Image (tube, rainbow, N blue to C red):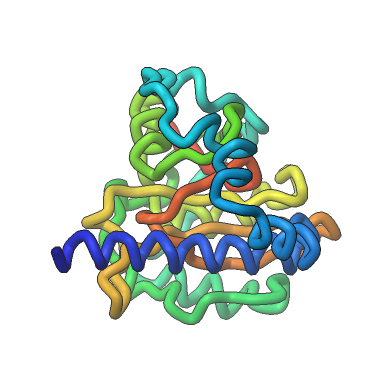
Length: 229
């Protein structure tokens, strides 16, 4: 029972944070929110769920749910790159370029991504978007990344994209850097936190954390890092 409650609480927390982010970004108004809350359960189901007892449908394959948003080309891990101190150095150097940085993005909290980068490595970087209505899960996005032979570089990979490719990022989107849950920092509530960069419509940036246990929509895009042979 505790596992079910914790999972539900994590999902609720993620939805609350995503809702506030969309409100602050101008993608959601208080009027939208109020109108949704005032709908009856039947009206909500009719508009968003199809029916109170919908027929089960086969889930679309992951390759059908996501499409390329932007190809950022190649990044090269710079000489002098030190994985153990990358995030501290990056944030000290770039904090003024962000309107907000989550203080939990530290080398201590994200020490062990699936792929630890080394100086001189070259990676192809793309960002993918959701192209189906509604929401998708982190598991679906990770499954799609598997079809792309992606490697997971964590918060460190996101930091290198920001330093070298931020001007190529389409605005008004969140860009997450996914990894396996056991490679992500776990907060005090037991939630696994996903590093992500937000590029506001006006061009401002934020370096933040979301929840692996959350759901995602078309504003939530994600990086795909691949080895260059």
